[in-house]
Image 1 (cartoon, helix red, strand yellow):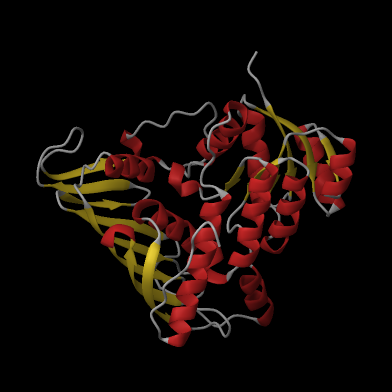
Image 2 (spheres, rainbow, N blue to C red; image 1 turned 90 degrees about the vertical axis):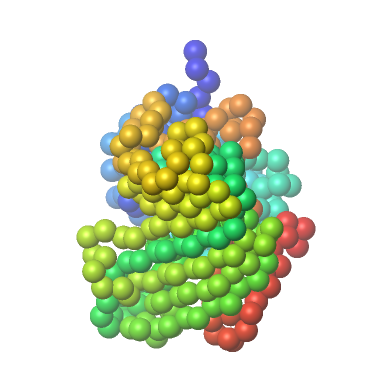
Length: 349
């Protein structure tokens, strides 16, 4: 009989319910209970999933047995819940962004290390077939030595002045960074490594406290040159967001987005022919025991369960989550001060 990871889900908004559906569908999971401070939400979700429901993590931990916790609550509670769970010896999967700032994020990471548990943060685009295929190709040096990377993330989420309540809600969600941009920044770090320096420009178009448009020139480990172009006040991206990575190496170039991989190769290299080629996401294999949406959500939950059950490394880890939070702060600091920033993001901080 297959060993199962017994979990509790805290927070029953959209992502919490999605996690519950996937946990019920994947054979390596056993859903023990659901938790939400809103009693009606907890009761209805418990009935839907056929499990016990609780109004707080503390009540669930004292009354139910589970090995791991999925934290799908609002951002401001990630730090408190995450630390509490790892101190209880629970493995923890936390939605993105990891925390409200890098100080909280590094504390979460250190608490997890001290407790010896597995942790993961929900940067699910790493598991999408096109980005996963591109990363594999990069590790095989299909492009030769990587020299340049450009990240492009565009949305049309804020294209007019907002009401006060809407502004407050967006600020609490980390602004544009908490929407799609952190996914892109995680991919950037995954492909290019740690940034050694960056110089950013930020612009407020409609927001009074948040940056709506962000661009930066970066230098990464190994001398890789990078450009970051982010914004949620671009018109024309209502129906579909833009999330793209442009990679240039000594032997070829690659453009990656959720729909496809475009390459130009100076030489044939396994499944990438010489010259121009185009691979659609639908052509790439997607092996999972329970498919749910195109974003790699099932794959990332499989990865978390396997890391716990097989005692392997989980990723993206909470340290990866800390790096993204720190990069966000560096972009804002540079954009505000007009100075080039050298982020100190060593694990030993």
